[in-house]
Amino acid sequence: MLAVTIATADDPCAVLTPLYANGKKRWNTQIERYVQTLTLGSTATFQFRKMCNRIASFADSRFRLTRPEKNMSSTRSRSLLALTCILAACSSSAGEIPEYQAEIIAEFDASDARQGIAVDQNYFYAVNNYAISKHNKENGEVVAAWQGTSEGDPLFHMDSLLALDGQLFASHSNYPSSPMTSSVEVWNADDMKHVASHSFGIHVGSMTWLDQYNGEWWGAFANYDKIQKGQSDSYGTTNRTQIVRFSNEFLVLEAWTLPLEVLDRMRPMSNSGGSWGPDGYLYLTGHDHGELYVMEIPEFG
Image (cartoon, rainbow, N blue to C red; front, side, top):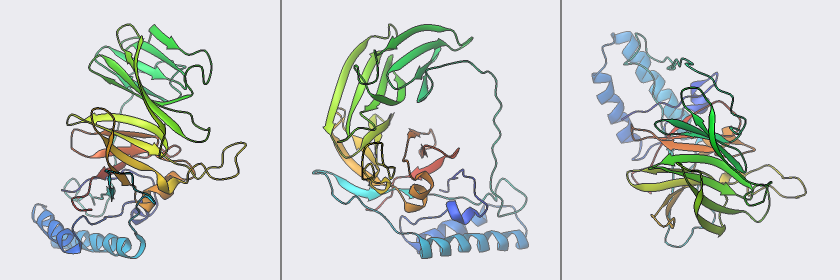
């Protein structure tokens, strides 16, 4: 199954790089099976195969899997795969990069939307470092809010928000302070009362996002090449960023690093957002570029 990485690059090989879960042999088999489903002429089919081989060669020469320098106990560490797709089935000619169109249907002022938003059936929730505002989805009107006193009182840096089953789950850290600490903070969406907190203590990075997929919790602990104010070393180094799978009690069960090709697009910052799609792929964002990275968990280590 092929997926699409949406990125801005003059050369698709620079960002759209196929990485093999089971080696080149399986990759070639997948390509041939896919070609058989296309309604292309012989010339276009040849161009499609040529482009696939070009990207495969690029991956062979440039890509190296990365792993955390130190594994956590009871954790298997793997590398996520960035998948690529040459749009052939949806185009009259092979080798084109797919483009998607989105129509803006409404815009609202939301001063708290500095870090992100969460959405449920009737409302959207804007999140800032230490504040959340609840907005009517029809007109954008603020109907409720939770407000911290100041940065660090009681929260430092909420990086994202998830609306799920009548509750709001925030990914929180003490960014940019050191050593890094993180927590999951929970509110009732109805009355915006804070109801729970899970502290990770000093951990492997700053927690930046949280999502639930197939009944399991997923998230990221980000690290940064950026040297923060008043510090002399990088804030963990971007290469140490990890995607993690949690138990229901937020114990880390598994962890994966990201491909260097993706990390290089995120530097000097890190993975800031993530969400599982209904297609079974994990969609990640960095901090600066308007790009989505479509990821898949590898079948083998």
